[in-house]
Image 1 (cartoon, rainbow, N blue to C red):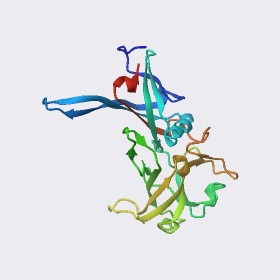
Image 2: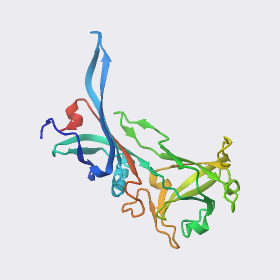
Image 3: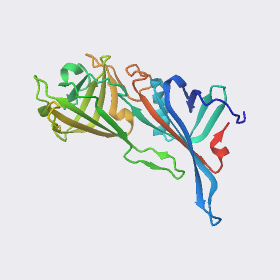
Image 4: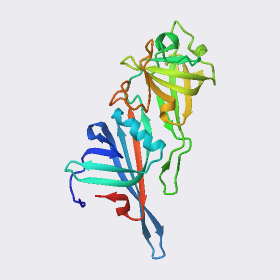
Length: 280
């Protein structure tokens, strides 16, 4: 099928063999960056080579495992965009990178802390309760090596997360005393459905929160972790007596919720000619 003018609305995007339909997609963009040089003729000249970058938020949690695997294996993949009129555009030999989208709505009920690495069984009673947070915790995701391969495509090596939150001191606990500064620990955020989002393999840092004369006195906590994959540092659990626990990149997730959690997907393809990168 050759290129033809038509609607820009999508019905789906396929990442390798995994298709996500448009109702689970948000913030789609596809951009082209050409290579050029300032020629003696007095203006820039395009070399012909170019890269195309697709970016989209995906909230279909059933697709996380397969797309996450494309990232960790650094697999060259075809990404196929399908439009409302059934026209398709394929981006060839893309390298894919994913970043978690967590707590994109106000959904943290309580915070729990574990210094003992005691596992997730009976979480609400075996972990130390830290009460509620002031406002929504801030999560920042990054790649310690944020570099590219020789074609300018993302090169995955490891991933990192930073969580920052404020805890007012409840009447029945000394929140400041709960945390052993700079120590290894796990943090659990209880979700409204009763399940828990657990961050593990990191270290915690604390200080008394800034005071503006009206804000409740609180403790500022920062948690930082680095792992081989997102599944190494993020998991979900029901916290039951014999807890069911799923890594962020579990193959068949049941504890994550669509539209609440997901991934930002970046796919970058590059070639010497537009026809090498894009096929209509």
